[in-house]
Amino acid sequence: SALFKVFGPTEAGVKELVQGTEEGIELAFLPSFPEIRLRVIVRGADEEEITARYQQCEAEISERLGAYLYGTGDEVMEAVVGRLLKEKGKTIAVAESCTGGLIAHRITQVSGSSAYFLQGVVAYSNESKEKLLGVPPAVLEKYGPVSKETAEHMAMGVRERSGAAIGVATTGIAGPTGGTPDTPVGRVFIALATEDIVEVKQYDFLGDRHGVKLMASTVALDRVRRYLLGI
Image 1 (tube, rainbow, N blue to C red):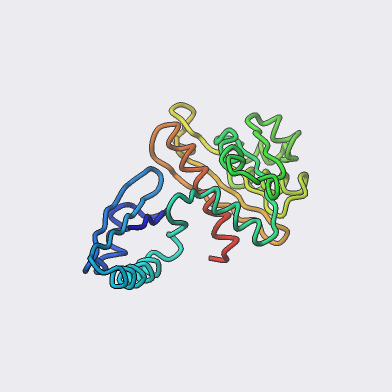
Image 2: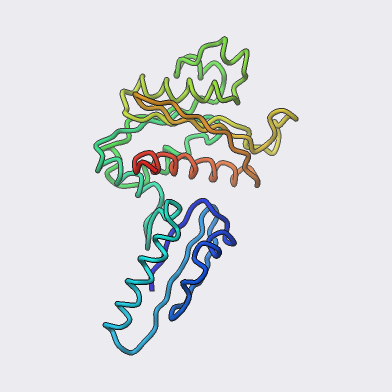
């Protein structure tokens, strides 16, 4: 048996992606928010036959899942990102508002993360965004702390001030209070900045406060993973 770690699609989406690969194997879908775990089981009496069937199955499922497949077995997203950062010789720094340091916590849970993690800033107030990250007061006044423009400046600020190759930032409304018609609970902006690019994406996550924070931190890490893989 083997365990595939998938992030992005729903359980129904994963089932649709791997449909048609079930012949001669058993598939078990194991939702574990915010990811889907897919266990593949191959049974038989002949070891060589089982190995051959498994290898064929692994190759086909991996191809079907594509970029959504981030790891196997005991791998976790933050460890996969850490491995890629080391392989690429890149460093990272994070600026967090709504995630409250969760991204930095997850990255530093991995042994050896000091090789690539330089700095984490939790800038919750507007004042801290200005003083610690250099977000212009005019940007905060015009667009607000939960905005594409603020996230962009947060990512650029933490990257420039830390000297990291990659800067990541989050700002949003984790709830259950604080939402407005224009900026509802679950609205999160996640930015990724490098020397050459600054990309900001808007997300609307569902769930309670913990769920929004966990999803936002995972999406942020996945954004780094995809950037490093060029996908």
